[in-house]
Image (tube, rainbow over all chains, first blue to last red; front, side, top):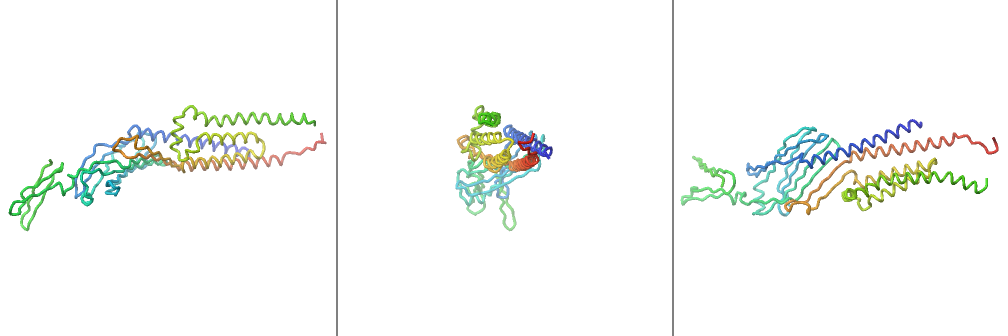
Length: 201
Length: 166
């Protein structure tokens, strides 16, 4: 029986040491990954599509650590200055093996109609960014950056952006566009379609 | 046996135990206290990130030193195993409390960030590993119980020689 107890004691000691070593190595490796910008955001681009203001944020994930990133999830929450949620977007990725890199595109979609309803002028909107990742299948890591202030340009609001002026007969005479992107105004009556294009300012 | 001789016998039994207890207490306490004095910045960072930071690492060191001294003093008795089991249970509870169930949260105040940034919160979840360590602690308790049973059976099997027999 003493031999069994001795073997049990050694097994517990070795298993505990290995567990502590794994924990220390994985946390060290994870922090090295974050500090060496293994997860970096690229240059964002903006697009207006179907009444939504869409910001595209590319991320490059270069997993130079010792273990696989089992799951990576990026969530952004856009809030008005009072804290009311305007939009929420989540992007998930699959397994990112150790030594590999991948590109992730995260899209932040803001409903322009909602922005008009909130009657926001040139104010700051707030953004919460949450990055969740599962490391080595065991360790969960989450970074939350809350209440980041983003200036909101009211010229994006269609009500103040596009102007249509008419002549005395009521037909459209000019179409103004205060945005930074091209816009198209389509007018149609029973028989004809008028297309008026406006270049970016 | 005269009283003087009896005192000398007690001294020969107790003195090595006290010395051994002091040495092991120093070793156990030193393992925790040496980082406290050599790396005070790291220790203060660990204390602020742990939720039960008010208790502090010196208190943990004191608890483990007290247990180790008691275990060494009661060596070769049944109390040694009871104290070992108690120490394992206390270390399990302390580990759960200090790591907040395996979830460590660090909040970076806004002062350390650019003006347009909000607060930064970092969360590390190692509850799975904590569960594994708790399982090993339970196995350690089982091991101590088996050692206590073995010790008691050994005591029962020892032949009792009456003093009058040669």
